[in-house]
Amino acid sequence: MNLKVKIAPGLELRNPVITASGTFGYGPEYADFVDLSRLGGIIVKGTTLEPRQGNPYPRIAETPSGMLNAVGLQNPGVDAFVNMTYRIIRDIDTAVIVNISGSSPEDYAEVSRRLSGLDRIAAIEVNISCPNVKSGGMAFGTSTDGAAMVTKAVRENYDGPVIVKLSPNVTDIVSIAKAAEDAGADALSLTNTFLGMAVDVERMKPLLSTVTGGLSGPCIRPIAVRMVWQVAKAVQVPVIGLGGIMNGRDALEFIMAGATAIQVGTANFIDPAVSVRIVDEIREFCDRHGVADLSEIRGII
Amino acid sequence: MKEKSLFEIIDIESLPLGNALMKLRPCSGKMPDMEPGQFVNILVPDTPGAFLRRPISICNVCDGLLWLFIKAAGTGTRHLCSMKAGEKLDIVLPLGNGFTMPESKDARILLIGGGVGIAPLLYFGIRLREQGYNPRFLLGGATADSLQLLDEFKKAGEVYITTDDGSCGVRGTVLAHDIIRSQTDRFYCCGPTPMMKGVAALAREMNVDCEVSLENRMACGLGACLCCVEDTIEGHRCVCSWGPVFNTKELKWHES
Image (tube, rainbow over all chains, first blue to last red; front, side, top):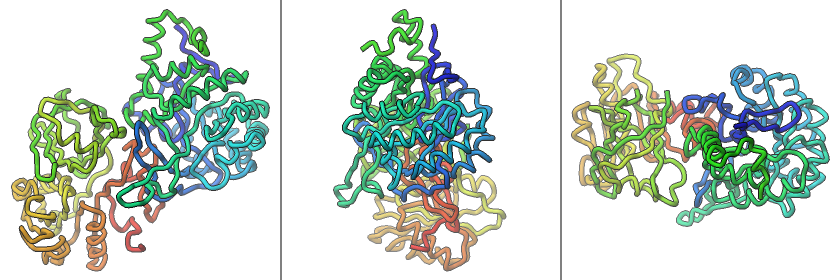
């Protein structure tokens, strides 16, 4: 059976299971629970040009079948990544993908340039969909022009595969997806978190310091599956599906809706070993259904 | 090394206010090494509304059993407190960094706990006693009823008590007890945030070293999601992986 999937020219993953940015640290945080070499890939924490402290606490609220977060891209900046973190993670035997964010297309271009010499980085995932920062982030992901502009800025400054991560907080995700594809994206990942809000009724205050935050977990899965299905039908490039995947069954839902690979995010918080279990469960499904290659069921719906 | 393991509830004692003292045995038969001040992250079974794990302090490790003193604070912890012996729990442990041992065996140390915050101080106090230190405990509760595990604490050192209503010990918060102003080299404190801030302010005034154990809301427990950060002099630091124990010199509490 073949679980290998091709995401972009020169980027083949040993299986379709990738850990989502912001939920898996840089990888070593989970090494006690997961044999990292069994993963299709790891997408590391969102990286920006300058170090960022992120938003004030509280940054998290539990919600029905999910959670809201308002971390706000806390990270030590791209230079710290290149000079320190990269040395620690460069020998992890899986595809290590760096998620990047910025406040302007120039930020994205500069971060891409600084990452371009790192031979063990498999790809860049361009975050144009963070709902938790004031400028940039999601702003670029909510218009076709913004999505195209940022995609182009990265494409022109990075030789490796470029994955663009789309925001679900739009009226027509298909048009944004096409704009990113036309601007040179090798693959698209969707969805990022949904803008949400929760109130502590007894205290009459929002649960998050920023009032609104990004909703993730199984509560968003049906919407994410629908969006992946719509986008996969409309674009030629591979789609990476994510949104509330908790097990192999959920992952297969995305694959049948058209995803080439999937990302596991919030589920890592519930079960730190879930990512490799999902690989096993996909394999078990394929065995049971006589699927020799995932392409046989990809986009079957 | 951290692990995700199944534990069986061997004994669960219901306490006032819906709280519980749970004693668990690892189904594997092998108890991981755990340091006082570390915590565990528990998956709440069969409880819609408890999606994330619940971080709980390690109260004691004794005779092959892990003790957890759980406050019924919400949907998840209420369910945990209502569980029965024989039921099993999926636990990720041990997490975080514990209390720092005092440099000298002669150090005058005071372990100050409030409410369910007394839990990690028991394990730490027992460890201190075993290693030849002389811990003293100052334990505060709302009422006499809310003070738990006193016999266990007394085995490890002298115990001083305050209650808000005066039903046991000195009336008032831990700050009302004279012992807190006695000559001391280090405070170790765990309890409600206002209480810890009060103790930290006093420690600063008295020039006493002070460690506190924080309980910010968290998701992963592994330092990956960056949700549980505390604002420190070195920037935002995860309580789950950098703490939960912090020296109050690292915190910015006195600035607010």
